[in-house]
Amino acid sequence: MIDMTTAKQRWLDSLWPFVRAHLPPAPSRVLEIGCGPAGGFVPAMRRSDYDAVGVDPAAPSGPGYHQTEFEKHQLGRPVDAIVACTSLHHVDDLDEVLNRAAAALTPGGAFIVVEWAYERFDEATARWSFDRLPDSGERGWLHSHREQWQASGQPWQSYLQDWAGRERLYRGEAIIQALQARFQSRLDTRAPYFFPDLHPVSQADEQAAIDAGEIRATGIHYVGTKRYPA
Image: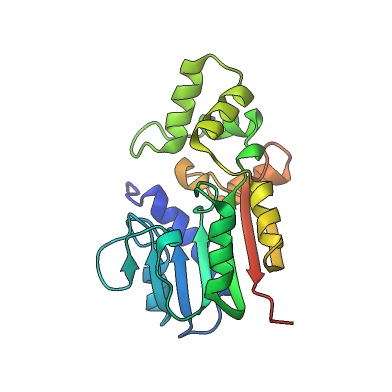
């Protein structure tokens, strides 16, 4: 049987247990930064009885979605948790976004972050990923990078740095430092990141390669809480 599940849905399905484990009890108020056109985790949160909203210029139409950048979103009363899944490394102003996130949370509220440290995407990790890309079906961002790198004639590190500079990406370590400056860190771990685009390679397969030292873990799982007023 052909698996018609998209890479994006495999990604959301794999991460939902992590997000769910760090949310406060339902029916808490939760805001997702960068929910995307499919709504991100908002549908799953609503099915779990959360009062959840998504903010993204490409958010779906309908109640609970706001089609704008988080920086421009008119915040109402504070929320109990914020989820940001791969939405911080490409914002225009990371400090502004995190300051607004901190201001939007209730004291003790959770900030649940899934991110990517592009600087850890070394050549060995790239080749491991590119060698496992499916030859048919959905073609995603890793296919594009494989083709563009081959066409560029550059060493991998030069290609990666040029691309990250054009895209104005924040390094993963810079994101973590900015989070730690504003939140009380509860969890900060590195994790698999590429597996949804490498189907049938699983999250466990990628983790095994990380554990064996074949590739680097480029995913970031972070949970922080807003400090209580002194």
